[in-house]
Image (cartoon, rainbow, N blue to C red):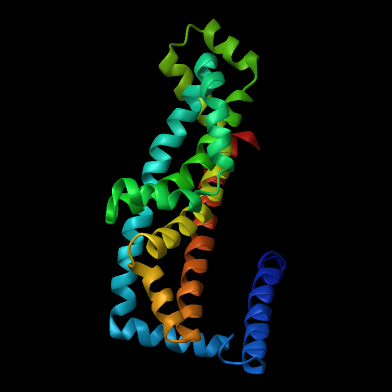
Length: 250
């Protein structure tokens, strides 16, 4: 059992510790103005936590992220399956979806600022726009890939439209949707920081900006490190959910 666990998890943990060691060595070798060691980053993060500043800013960013990301899921998943079922609607909207998906959303922030001003709502809109299109696009592609034979079998059993969605479309499309969700997590985090940079300085974005202005490299690295951990953790959670609900495909 121990050998099995080592074979399964050993490379992962070896990679993690090797990365930390390289970070520590590189940080001690480079100028403190450009890079700091891992130990210094963790020490600065601990000081920020003890001061209470980090917790307050983290909760502010978490509220923004969860609000925008939840709205993206609530819109992207059902709309994607609806577009897959309604061909006319899909053909009409697909060019706009592709254009917006390929558009760098940072470029829209000044427009959002001029339309909505500062505040929480425009920042939520930025996070939503960053996150919704990967979910929407992958859901549409997943629903379109359903074999026609499966739809025909469902109709032969006189399935209602609701039963078709519940028993065929949602289970089949979920793995594709979760792929979009994992992509959307990273984009939503980028959108969160961009909104906090350009709309109103709050949350972890404010911590990064303040640390940069004060030449506090350790503070910058500490905030970025936490954001990276959050992103990796959420993507791993999304992968676990996908595997749980997609066991029928194995």
